[in-house]
Amino acid sequence: MAASHQSRSEPLPLTDVRELLRFYADAGVDEALLDEPVDRFAESHAATAARAPAAETNTASQTERWRRTEPAPAPRPAAPPTLSVPDEAQAARARDMAREAASLDELRAIVAGFDGCNLKFTAKQMVFADGNPQADLMLIGEAPGRDEDLEGLPFVGKSGRLLDRILGAIGIDRTSAYIANVIPWRPPGNRTPTPLETEICRPFIERQIELANPKVIMTLGGPAAKVVLHANEGVLRMRGNWKVHTTAAGLTIPAMPTLHPAYLLRNPAHKKLAWRDFLDVRAKLEELRG
Ligand code: URA
Figure 1 (tube, rainbow, N blue to C red):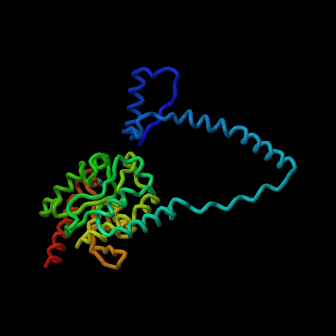
Figure 2: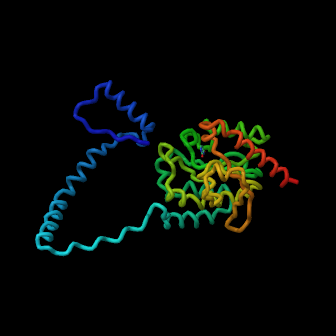
Protein backbone atom coordinates (compact mmCIF):
# COMPACT_ATOMS: atom_id res chain seq x y z
CA MET A 1 0.00 0.00 0.00
CA ALA A 2 1.29 3.49 -0.72
CA ALA A 3 1.08 6.59 1.45
CA SER A 4 0.21 10.19 0.71
CA HIS A 5 1.33 13.09 2.89
CA GLN A 6 -0.75 15.82 4.49
CA SER A 7 0.59 19.28 3.74
CA ARG A 8 1.57 21.25 6.84
CA SER A 9 3.28 24.55 7.09
CA GLU A 10 5.41 23.31 10.03
CA PRO A 11 7.42 20.09 9.82
CA LEU A 12 6.04 17.35 12.07
CA PRO A 13 7.95 16.85 15.33
CA LEU A 14 10.06 13.69 15.29
CA THR A 15 7.80 11.80 17.72
CA ASP A 16 4.75 12.51 15.49
CA VAL A 17 6.65 11.30 12.44
CA ARG A 18 7.43 8.03 14.25
CA GLU A 19 3.78 7.68 15.26
CA LEU A 20 2.69 8.35 11.68
CA LEU A 21 5.15 5.80 10.28
CA ARG A 22 4.01 3.22 12.85
CA PHE A 23 0.39 3.92 11.87
CA TYR A 24 1.25 3.47 8.17
CA ALA A 25 3.20 0.24 8.83
CA ASP A 26 0.29 -1.20 10.89
CA ALA A 27 -2.06 -0.35 8.03
CA GLY A 28 0.19 -2.16 5.53
CA VAL A 29 1.74 0.95 3.96
CA ASP A 30 5.22 -0.47 3.64
CA GLU A 31 6.83 1.21 0.68
CA ALA A 32 6.87 4.35 -1.44
CA LEU A 33 5.62 4.07 -5.02
CA LEU A 34 7.11 7.37 -6.19
CA ASP A 35 10.33 9.18 -5.41
CA GLU A 36 8.51 12.36 -4.34
CA PRO A 37 5.46 12.51 -2.01
CA VAL A 38 2.17 13.56 -3.62
CA ASP A 39 -0.02 15.89 -1.57
CA ARG A 40 -3.43 14.26 -2.20
CA PHE A 41 -5.10 16.57 0.33
CA ALA A 42 -4.08 19.64 -1.66
CA GLU A 43 -5.24 17.93 -4.87
CA SER A 44 -8.66 17.09 -3.46
CA HIS A 45 -9.09 20.60 -1.96
CA ALA A 46 -8.33 22.08 -5.37
CA ALA A 47 -10.79 19.69 -7.07
CA THR A 48 -13.52 20.52 -4.52
CA ALA A 49 -12.93 24.25 -4.98
CA ALA A 50 -13.16 23.87 -8.77
CA ARG A 51 -16.48 22.00 -8.45
CA ALA A 52 -18.05 24.35 -5.88
CA PRO A 53 -19.74 26.94 -8.20
CA ALA A 54 -21.29 24.20 -10.36
CA ALA A 55 -22.59 22.41 -7.28
CA GLU A 56 -24.19 25.62 -6.02
CA THR A 57 -25.88 26.22 -9.38
CA ASN A 58 -27.17 22.64 -9.44
CA THR A 59 -28.60 22.94 -5.96
CA ALA A 60 -30.24 26.22 -6.83
CA SER A 61 -31.90 24.93 -9.99
CA GLN A 62 -33.05 21.79 -8.20
CA THR A 63 -34.67 23.88 -5.45
CA GLU A 64 -36.29 26.00 -8.14
CA ARG A 65 -37.77 22.87 -9.81
CA TRP A 66 -39.14 21.58 -6.51
CA ARG A 67 -40.68 25.00 -5.88
CA ARG A 68 -42.45 24.76 -9.24
CA THR A 69 -43.48 21.18 -8.25
CA GLU A 70 -42.05 19.77 -11.45
CA PRO A 71 -41.99 15.97 -11.40
CA ALA A 72 -38.61 14.79 -10.30
CA PRO A 73 -36.58 13.20 -13.10
CA ALA A 74 -37.04 9.42 -13.27
CA PRO A 75 -34.27 7.60 -11.42
CA ARG A 76 -31.55 6.43 -13.77
CA PRO A 77 -31.46 2.67 -14.33
CA ALA A 78 -28.76 1.09 -12.18
CA ALA A 79 -25.44 0.90 -13.99
CA PRO A 80 -24.48 -2.66 -14.90
CA PRO A 81 -21.91 -4.08 -12.46
CA THR A 82 -18.51 -3.26 -13.88
CA LEU A 83 -16.18 -5.08 -11.51
CA SER A 84 -16.86 -8.53 -12.93
CA VAL A 85 -16.83 -7.28 -16.51
CA PRO A 86 -13.33 -7.42 -17.90
CA ASP A 87 -11.89 -4.44 -19.73
CA GLU A 88 -12.71 -6.09 -23.03
CA ALA A 89 -10.48 -3.80 -25.06
CA GLN A 90 -7.37 -4.63 -23.03
CA ALA A 91 -8.23 -8.30 -22.57
CA ALA A 92 -8.86 -8.63 -26.32
CA ARG A 93 -5.54 -6.89 -27.07
CA ALA A 94 -3.78 -9.25 -24.67
CA ARG A 95 -5.43 -12.23 -26.41
CA ASP A 96 -4.32 -11.05 -29.85
CA MET A 97 -0.80 -10.30 -28.67
CA ALA A 98 -0.45 -13.60 -26.79
CA ARG A 99 -1.57 -15.53 -29.88
CA GLU A 100 1.25 -13.91 -31.87
CA ALA A 101 3.93 -15.49 -29.64
CA ALA A 102 5.53 -18.52 -31.27
CA SER A 103 7.91 -19.22 -28.39
CA LEU A 104 8.25 -18.48 -24.68
CA ASP A 105 10.97 -15.93 -25.46
CA GLU A 106 8.63 -14.13 -27.83
CA LEU A 107 5.86 -14.25 -25.23
CA ARG A 108 8.19 -12.80 -22.59
CA ALA A 109 9.01 -9.89 -24.94
CA ILE A 110 5.32 -9.37 -25.76
CA VAL A 111 4.29 -9.29 -22.09
CA ALA A 112 7.17 -6.90 -21.34
CA GLY A 113 5.85 -4.54 -24.03
CA PHE A 114 2.16 -4.79 -23.01
CA ASP A 115 0.90 -1.63 -21.30
CA GLY A 116 -2.78 -2.54 -20.84
CA CYS A 117 -2.55 -3.60 -17.20
CA ASN A 118 -2.05 -0.87 -14.60
CA LEU A 119 -0.06 -3.21 -12.34
CA LYS A 120 2.85 -2.83 -14.71
CA PHE A 121 3.22 0.82 -13.71
CA THR A 122 3.54 0.23 -9.98
CA ALA A 123 5.69 -2.91 -10.16
CA LYS A 124 9.46 -2.59 -10.22
CA GLN A 125 9.75 -5.17 -12.98
CA MET A 126 7.97 -8.01 -14.72
CA VAL A 127 8.16 -11.48 -13.17
CA PHE A 128 7.73 -13.89 -16.07
CA ALA A 129 9.04 -17.32 -15.05
CA ASP A 130 11.83 -19.31 -13.49
CA GLY A 131 13.08 -22.85 -13.90
CA ASN A 132 13.25 -25.07 -16.92
CA PRO A 133 10.69 -24.37 -19.68
CA GLN A 134 11.21 -27.92 -20.96
CA ALA A 135 10.29 -29.45 -17.58
CA ASP A 136 7.45 -31.96 -17.28
CA LEU A 137 5.99 -30.06 -14.31
CA MET A 138 4.70 -26.47 -14.40
CA LEU A 139 3.77 -24.69 -11.15
CA ILE A 140 1.55 -21.62 -11.26
CA GLY A 141 1.03 -19.11 -8.44
CA GLU A 142 -1.12 -15.99 -8.22
CA ALA A 143 1.15 -12.93 -8.46
CA PRO A 144 4.63 -11.86 -7.39
CA GLY A 145 5.21 -10.45 -3.92
CA ARG A 146 7.82 -7.99 -2.71
CA ASP A 147 10.87 -10.28 -3.02
CA GLU A 148 9.82 -11.49 -6.46
CA ASP A 149 9.28 -7.89 -7.60
CA LEU A 150 12.81 -7.02 -6.49
CA GLU A 151 14.46 -10.07 -8.05
CA GLY A 152 12.29 -10.48 -11.15
CA LEU A 153 11.75 -14.20 -10.43
CA PRO A 154 8.71 -16.06 -9.06
CA PHE A 155 8.66 -17.66 -5.61
CA VAL A 156 11.99 -16.44 -4.26
CA GLY A 157 10.74 -15.14 -0.89
CA LYS A 158 9.75 -17.05 2.23
CA SER A 159 6.96 -18.98 0.51
CA GLY A 160 9.30 -19.75 -2.40
CA ARG A 161 11.84 -21.25 -0.02
CA LEU A 162 9.12 -23.51 1.40
CA LEU A 163 8.09 -24.45 -2.15
CA ASP A 164 11.71 -25.37 -2.97
CA ARG A 165 11.85 -27.61 0.14
CA ILE A 166 8.60 -29.39 -0.77
CA LEU A 167 9.75 -29.87 -4.36
CA GLY A 168 13.11 -31.15 -3.13
CA ALA A 169 11.31 -33.80 -1.08
CA ILE A 170 9.87 -35.28 -4.29
CA GLY A 171 13.19 -35.02 -6.11
CA ILE A 172 12.42 -31.86 -8.09
CA ASP A 173 14.23 -28.51 -8.21
CA ARG A 174 14.20 -25.50 -10.51
CA THR A 175 16.05 -27.39 -13.21
CA SER A 176 13.20 -29.90 -13.39
CA ALA A 177 10.20 -27.59 -12.88
CA TYR A 178 8.93 -24.47 -14.66
CA ILE A 179 7.40 -21.81 -12.38
CA ALA A 180 5.17 -18.86 -13.31
CA ASN A 181 2.30 -16.73 -12.02
CA VAL A 182 -1.13 -15.84 -13.37
CA ILE A 183 -0.20 -12.14 -13.01
CA PRO A 184 3.33 -11.13 -14.03
CA TRP A 185 3.46 -7.86 -12.02
CA ARG A 186 3.34 -7.37 -8.26
CA PRO A 187 0.08 -5.75 -7.11
CA PRO A 188 0.97 -2.77 -4.88
CA GLY A 189 1.24 -3.76 -1.22
CA ASN A 190 0.52 -7.38 -2.24
CA ARG A 191 -3.18 -6.61 -2.56
CA THR A 192 -5.38 -9.17 -4.31
CA PRO A 193 -5.41 -8.55 -8.07
CA THR A 194 -8.80 -7.24 -9.21
CA PRO A 195 -10.99 -9.42 -11.49
CA LEU A 196 -10.24 -6.91 -14.24
CA GLU A 197 -6.47 -7.24 -13.87
CA THR A 198 -6.81 -11.02 -13.78
CA GLU A 199 -8.89 -11.14 -16.97
CA ILE A 200 -6.45 -8.86 -18.75
CA CYS A 201 -3.49 -11.11 -17.81
CA ARG A 202 -5.31 -14.43 -18.39
CA PRO A 203 -4.37 -14.76 -22.11
CA PHE A 204 -0.67 -14.49 -21.25
CA ILE A 205 -0.60 -17.34 -18.71
CA GLU A 206 -2.82 -19.45 -20.99
CA ARG A 207 -0.37 -18.98 -23.86
CA GLN A 208 2.58 -19.56 -21.51
CA ILE A 209 1.10 -22.94 -20.53
CA GLU A 210 0.43 -23.79 -24.17
CA LEU A 211 3.99 -22.95 -25.24
CA ALA A 212 5.65 -24.70 -22.26
CA ASN A 213 3.36 -27.68 -22.84
CA PRO A 214 4.12 -29.45 -19.53
CA LYS A 215 2.95 -33.01 -18.80
CA VAL A 216 1.45 -31.92 -15.45
CA ILE A 217 0.38 -28.58 -13.95
CA MET A 218 0.14 -27.68 -10.26
CA THR A 219 -1.80 -24.57 -9.28
CA LEU A 220 -0.73 -23.01 -5.98
CA GLY A 221 -3.64 -21.49 -4.06
CA GLY A 222 -7.27 -20.75 -4.91
CA PRO A 223 -6.83 -17.74 -7.24
CA ALA A 224 -4.46 -19.63 -9.60
CA ALA A 225 -6.84 -22.63 -9.65
CA LYS A 226 -9.75 -20.33 -10.51
CA VAL A 227 -7.98 -18.91 -13.55
CA VAL A 228 -6.15 -21.98 -14.86
CA LEU A 229 -8.84 -24.57 -14.10
CA HIS A 230 -11.96 -22.38 -14.35
CA ALA A 231 -12.83 -23.72 -10.90
CA ASN A 232 -15.17 -22.03 -8.47
CA GLU A 233 -14.88 -24.30 -5.42
CA GLY A 234 -12.77 -23.31 -2.44
CA VAL A 235 -9.19 -24.58 -2.69
CA LEU A 236 -9.46 -26.71 0.46
CA ARG A 237 -12.29 -28.65 -1.16
CA MET A 238 -10.66 -28.75 -4.59
CA ARG A 239 -7.09 -29.69 -3.66
CA GLY A 240 -6.04 -33.28 -4.00
CA ASN A 241 -8.44 -33.89 -6.91
CA TRP A 242 -7.10 -34.14 -10.43
CA LYS A 243 -8.53 -31.59 -12.86
CA VAL A 244 -7.77 -30.76 -16.45
CA HIS A 245 -6.48 -27.61 -18.11
CA THR A 246 -7.60 -27.34 -21.73
CA THR A 247 -5.44 -25.21 -24.04
CA ALA A 248 -6.81 -22.96 -26.79
CA ALA A 249 -5.87 -25.68 -29.29
CA GLY A 250 -7.91 -28.24 -27.30
CA LEU A 251 -5.00 -30.16 -25.71
CA THR A 252 -5.70 -31.37 -22.20
CA ILE A 253 -3.11 -31.32 -19.41
CA PRO A 254 -3.73 -33.01 -16.03
CA ALA A 255 -3.64 -30.45 -13.25
CA MET A 256 -3.47 -30.75 -9.49
CA PRO A 257 -4.71 -27.82 -7.42
CA THR A 258 -2.90 -27.52 -4.11
CA LEU A 259 -2.52 -25.07 -1.25
CA HIS A 260 -0.37 -21.97 -1.60
CA PRO A 261 2.98 -22.12 0.26
CA ALA A 262 2.18 -18.78 1.96
CA TYR A 263 -0.99 -20.39 3.34
CA LEU A 264 1.07 -23.37 4.53
CA LEU A 265 3.41 -21.00 6.38
CA ARG A 266 0.40 -19.58 8.22
CA ASN A 267 -1.27 -22.99 8.69
CA PRO A 268 1.51 -25.54 9.17
CA ALA A 269 -1.00 -28.21 10.21
CA HIS A 270 -2.15 -28.29 6.58
CA LYS A 271 1.31 -29.10 5.21
CA LYS A 272 0.38 -32.77 5.30
CA LEU A 273 -2.43 -32.09 2.79
CA ALA A 274 -0.04 -30.39 0.37
CA TRP A 275 2.46 -33.19 0.92
CA ARG A 276 -0.14 -35.71 -0.32
CA ASP A 277 -0.78 -33.56 -3.41
CA PHE A 278 2.93 -33.41 -4.26
CA LEU A 279 3.25 -37.19 -3.81
CA ASP A 280 0.30 -37.66 -6.17
CA VAL A 281 2.01 -35.41 -8.69
CA ARG A 282 5.24 -37.39 -8.45
CA ALA A 283 3.27 -40.61 -9.07
CA LYS A 284 1.48 -39.03 -12.06
CA LEU A 285 4.79 -37.86 -13.56
CA GLU A 286 6.24 -41.37 -13.20
CA GLU A 287 3.13 -42.87 -14.79
CA LEU A 288 3.23 -40.43 -17.73
CA ARG A 289 6.94 -40.98 -18.30
CA GLY A 290 6.17 -44.70 -18.52
N1 URA B 1 3.15 -15.87 -4.28
C1 URA B 1 2.80 -16.16 -5.55
O1 URA B 1 1.66 -16.52 -5.82
N2 URA B 1 3.75 -16.04 -6.49
C2 URA B 1 5.00 -15.66 -6.23
O2 URA B 1 5.80 -15.59 -7.15
C3 URA B 1 5.34 -15.39 -4.89
C4 URA B 1 4.41 -15.50 -3.93
